[in-house]
Image (cartoon, rainbow, N blue to C red; front, side, top):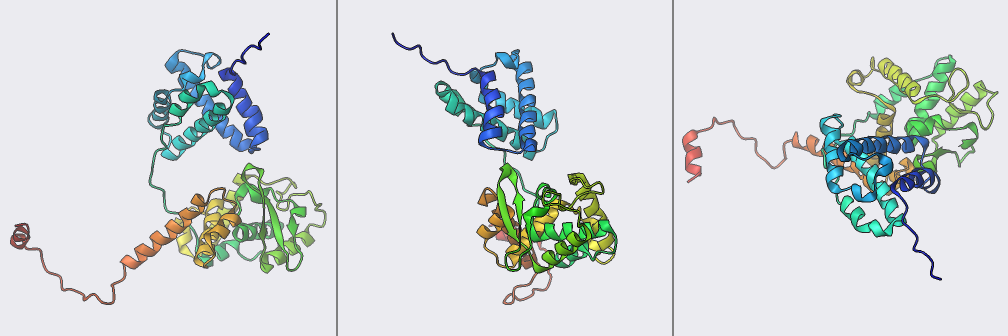
Length: 337
C-alpha cells in the first residue's frame, strides 16, 4: 500500500513556524528584532486582507505576488509616510519569510522566486555624523564626586572605547568585564545574540576599577551601569544622560550645540577614529560586530567623501590662479560653432 503524498504546509502554519521556530530558535534573534518583523507582517497581512478580500488565515503563498508586495510598499510610502529605509526594512522581513517558506514548501518555489524579485529601493545615504577626538573627550568629561557623574563617565568611556551599541552597553554585567593587566576586555552581546570581546584601554580599566570600588555591593551578575534603583538602564535613559553631557561640553566646543549627539553617533565616532588611525576595515568590522563588511565599508565611503570635499577647497599647487573675467556672450556663441 503506497503512502499518501505529504501535503505542503498551509500559509498560517508557515507563518507560525517562521516566528515560533525559525526566528526564535534557529536564528536566535532578539525579542526586539522579532517584534519588528512581527509588526511588519501585521501591516502586510492587514493590507493584503483589504486588497484581496481574504482573511490572513485563508491566504496562500500564491497570493503573495510581486504586484501585491509592490502595492504594499507603495502604501507604506504614500499613505503611511514611511521612509525608504523603513520601506526596505519591511521588504527585508517579507523576503526573509519567503526564503524560509521555500525550504518548507518546494512546490511553491516558482511563486516564491517571483515574489523575491521585488527590488530594494535605492536611496541616498546620509553622511555619518561623528565627533572629533577633542569633542568626544569633552563629552566623556571628568567625573565629580557624585554617583551619577562617575557612572556616566564610565559609560561614555566604554561606549567610545568599544563602539558598542546602546543595547550592548546597558546589557554589560560586572562579570563580563575582565580587568587583568595585559588581557583587559569586555564581553558584549550583540545582534542575533552573538558575542564578541573588545579590548579595553588602560584608562577605561582604571575608571571601571574606581567605579567598582564605589559599588562593593555589585555581584558578577549585576548590571555594570545600573540606574539609581540598581536595575538595568533603558535606551532612553542613556540618550538623555548623553544629551546632558553634550550640552555641558558645548561650552568648550560650540559645534556640539548643532550636533544631535546620540549613542549611535558615539559608535560612528569610534569607527571613524579607528579608520583614520589606519586600522584595517576587517578589524573594525570585528570590533563593531558587523555581520556584513558592506556595513563597515560605509565608514570608508564617508571618510573619503569628507576628504574629497576638503581637497576641493584647496588650490592645486601647479594651477595658476586666473584673474576673473566677465562672461562674453559672443565668445560663448563662437565656441559652439
